Amino acid sequence: LDISPKACRIAKATCRKRGLTNVRVMIADLANCKLWRKGVHSASLVVCANVLISPDKAVREAILSQIQRTLRRRGILILVVPSVESNEIVTKRRLEWIERMKEKGKDYRAEKKKLKSGSSSDTKKGVFSICGVRTQHYRKAEIKTDLRKRGFKILEMEKVEYPWQGTIEEPTEWMRSPYPYDWVIVARRSGAA
Image (tube, rainbow, N blue to C red; front, side, top):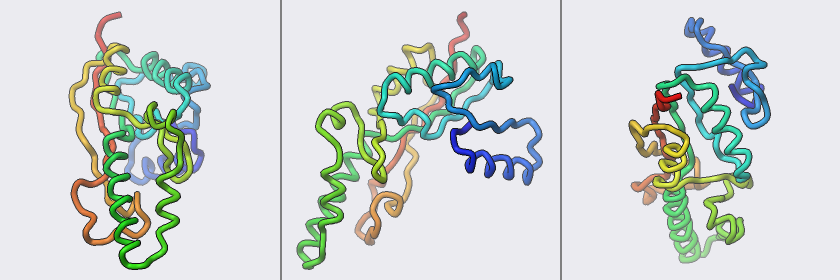
């Protein structure tokens, strides 16, 4: 499922290309649909990559409820969410970059503007701007607690790193580890009714 028709077209083409016949791809807004009306009654595996990113808690709760209703008992959830801790690393690197630009007499205003987006209220809630879009980020303990409250057992939780090019427009060679990252969580739904 994806809210994006383009993403669904790509997924369908990939499945055809690889001969995957046991995968159904559908356009849906998880926060505002009844999956059973789309013929989805249960699944043994749910993969959500950057799905729980709405700054609206009610939307995130609706999505989690939909996942919980659809995922079979003892089914597996693979969840990828943006990391608050990573955002802190990115902010520090952006400050370093601004200082280096100042020292070289370069225009740093565009980078400085990126630091000022978002309110202090958003920051406290873990909401940060990604490409101008307010996006929910999670602390490690926070997402683990949220999933446990919903009856999921965390099997694994790791950082999935990505290059600086996806975060800073013109990263230089000094921008190395630690890299920006998201959390990837593998969790099992409780077997209890």
